[in-house]
Length: 476
Image 1 (spheres, helix red, strand yellow):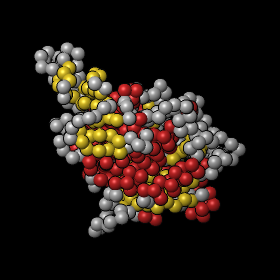
Image 2 (cartoon, one colour; image 1 turned 180 degrees about the vertical axis):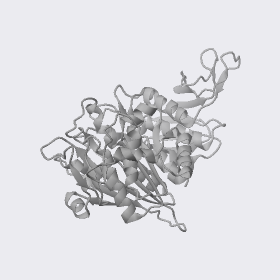
Image 3 (cartoon, helix red, strand yellow; image 1 turned 30 degrees about the horizontal axis):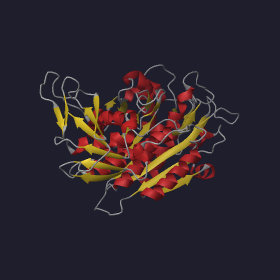
Image 4 (tube, one colour; image 1 turned 135 degrees about the vertical axis):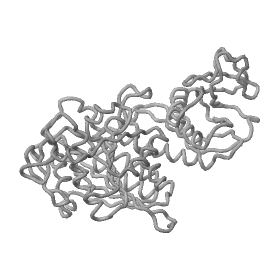
């Protein structure tokens, strides 16, 4: 999407989008825009409402914002207009920026409009959204030049759109190799380096936990390493490490899932969030060094699949007793974390994964579960999430939970076998492989990465984590 600032609507014919803050249903004063007046009896800016007027070949869409709104609500309101009212858009669209708008509100507005172009119909013959036309130019009517903010908003939404697509495309399309090709292509395009470890290289490096998960699939696992440094170096840069779970489909392995398997293409949503964040961080040229690892594998059922009661050796050198093959995400993350720490020594580490149903049982679909022993980092990443509507809430990592991962035969076991505290015991398992890193954060996003909303009839991706990770890194 290209944009252009304009100062007036002289000689304009097309569609005009007019966000309006709520006045009052009893207000006798009409809402005015140019020569258009709208009585408060029919529209007064109530949140989630809109009113369409056509006059002199111009379609005016008044968009109700309510009296107060947060970033996420504003983004959703504009996404809804873009998604549901696209038939009212011509090839020429003007966005009027209210005088009261802040930079964050402009960012949310433009991001929302671009996100409204997303459709689940990847394999349908359907008309493309007007905003996606290569020649389309959004005209911005504003007294202030918000071009820098608007460009950033477009980059945020573009990264989120790609992440939505990665998670929503079917697993026969999005294989580990597909994700390798995606990373290599986007790295070349946006400016980060990519290294790939296939089966043989992973064996040489000793990535035993990672390889065990992918043993039962014909789709070769791929250990994807991405490295970003800004083009212009600014003094001593901070170094952040990211690790994302990239299970492209999860049958549960030999502990096969008995329900909900149809949605398991979303089990790589944590990895997709890391992919999207790397694209966005490089696109924004943030002055920070980032190393990201996404271990990608398919957890399938086959004669070669790893077994419950197997003992495998991880990259760290520690042995792992397999209690449940459906607790596979933590295995690939364990090798990802160990490899990151040993070879790159980042100051900060964030891993992100659709890891446990337990986190959904605790928080529902409202926020992700946050685990860390670093209170300062906990506050920073929560603040980043609160600012953009990607919320997190902490759960404990108390030592008493260590007993849940203690094994008689190996250094550690991958599942407690208990029907309680599943998200916590999974986090304790990952902590075991962090070498007591003092700035490690684990995000369990099983309840927020994939779900129901007004933009599709079936469950689909949310792109949760892309903006969160980027904003957290930006504010370090």
